[in-house]
Length: 214
Image (tube, rainbow, N blue to C red; front, side, top):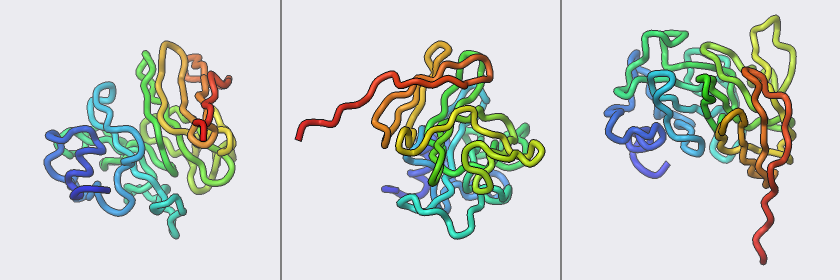
């Protein structure tokens, strides 16, 4: 991060004048180790009535943390966070903290569809990148599950779409009509993912990026 912690958090949330302090209610410091996903989307405010932010669960450069904390509700790492613009915790958050959902490794894109459903793209580590339908309080499995896996009786939520990292390594996403578009960094292509309500099962390449001439 380039500036002070407070400046970086306001930049990441997209609320330079709206989050005066980095400390949310309950003493949680949003700008501690691993930062709020400055490489992911800016804060999103509106459909959920507050600001969303991201906390990755890896060290700088992509290496996994020695003790991944995505499953630890007391840690903000590996979470999607929801806070009010003043930094306080909304009263209807699921755990009484900034945590909105958990079990994430590295969320990159957040987009709402016309019905208010929140879709996220996420880097896996070795085998699967993901599109997830984000729901209040849900656990998306990292580091116990990467991609589709055993939900442990519904404890974990499986992704709706997966790719190999060579095909994807997704960045931002956007919903247009009933289609989710996902930019792929390593895959150097734009994926088209048709949405059918809360389902997203079909994917195809919308176009491929050509390398610039040497």
